[in-house]
Image 1 (cartoon, rainbow, N blue to C red):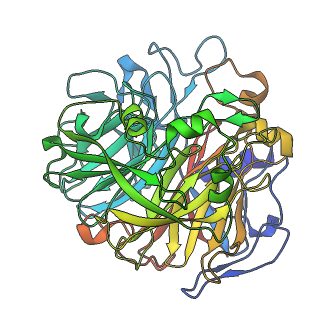
Image 2: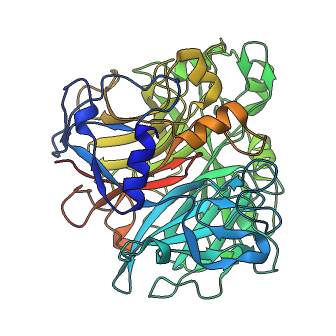
Amino acid sequence: MSSFHKVALLGAAGVTITVSALVAGQLAATASSGLSIGNVASANPRQGVQNNVLAPGLGQTSLAWGSLPLVNPDKAAGITHYGYVTSVGAPLTQDPKEAFKTEPDKNVYLVMGGHHYLFQGHEGGPQGYVTRIDLDEPDPARRVSLVAATDTDGKNLPTLDGITWDPFTRQLLVTAESKSPAGGVWAITLDDSGNATTGKAARLPALGSGGYEGVQIDEAGNVWLVEDIGGSAVSGGKRPHSFVYRFTPGDPGDLSKGGKLQALQVQRANGSAITATQLATDPADPVITDLHTYGRSFATTWVTVHDGTGGFDATASAADADATPFKRPENGVFRPGTGFGQFYFTETGDTSASSTLPGAYGAVFRLSQDSPNALKGRLSPVVIGDKEHTGFDNISFVTKDQLMVVEDAGDTLHTQRNALDSGYLVDLDGKEGKAKQLTRWLAEGRDASALYDATTSPGYNDGDNEVTGIHVSDGDASVGGLLGAASPRPFDGTWRMFWTQQHGDNVTWEVTRGR
């Protein structure tokens, strides 16, 4: 039995695992707001089974894993376990080799009705669904429940990626990362005890249909959406093809009443727009290099994509409106203490070392505005990716001056650099326009199930494990608890940190202070 599986089995029994003894390297990461941890010297190699390695000062506890049964399964649909499903309601060991992995993705932590819950959407398998982990339930077999698997018309939900809590509507908003017409946003209403009122998800057509992944709410009730659709391949890489959006509702308390969807437009030094048409024609446009250069800053404006209640293709409409596409932006979050005036979002890039196009390794960008409703702003790169640090995906502030960013580099790049994914702590203190200090807080491993998928996959499960769902929250379900409203204080007994190890065993972890 591998050392990882010893860890996984201990975690399955509810044991807290402290892994700092596995770490080589002792560099500390400290910001003015106080979090100090060690540094993991290097990523895990892409060889066999590998342990997760956390920085000195950190530990982790497994909360849920793929083989955990649901307390309220939908047996007819094959939705019977946390991270594994079958397409026909067959036994979990689906013929010919194994069951579908559902890949629980982003996390939302809420304290409701005196209970502490963690909600996730699932992005793999024949259909999507939403689950809830009861963090107060000591019995793992009674811990995870099914929240919703169908829409209000009784149709199966598409596979789901993003999730957030909208305190204005008292709804979970979940997103489907698929091109139109499959992609979009759905809402699930919860009561004050954290239970779904109908067990159904209502589509919100006014927010458009696109490859949405990241979703956040600001203090005005606007919905911010970050799209992840890979562009078409050309010589040397891929074209930028995805957009950043802001939806301004007519009634923040009822998103079904419609509103205005806008997309971010970035401008060249001469004031002209950087458009989808331009970058499709010339994906090596020097402006992409400029966007990925420390010290550069670009004027931005929001352009209207759609106004009303009916459905539409958001991606095509954003391109038609001369919005600016990026190379797979995926998730975003507001910086605490800025009055929702700073929005940080990730760009994954091409996830291949063979790409020679500018921006191939992605970035983390900061959009600065006077207010969340402002029309104008400035865009600057905060982290510029390279071969060793790329595939930036999920993102969360852990203090007001420290940002957590995790990789989804993919099997191809894992092989090219012989390195699995990592999670980084970005110290935002220091001079503007300079490279920020990155501290590796996580060198993700590869469990035996993921190794099997990577080497013997039947074709419907991904390979190496992926870091996703990094989430730091105090669980406050009020408007005052919006991510970005208050400065996090990790490990203070109220603020908690979570991440999900997708693929393979599909384990969701809580990060703790190590012994």
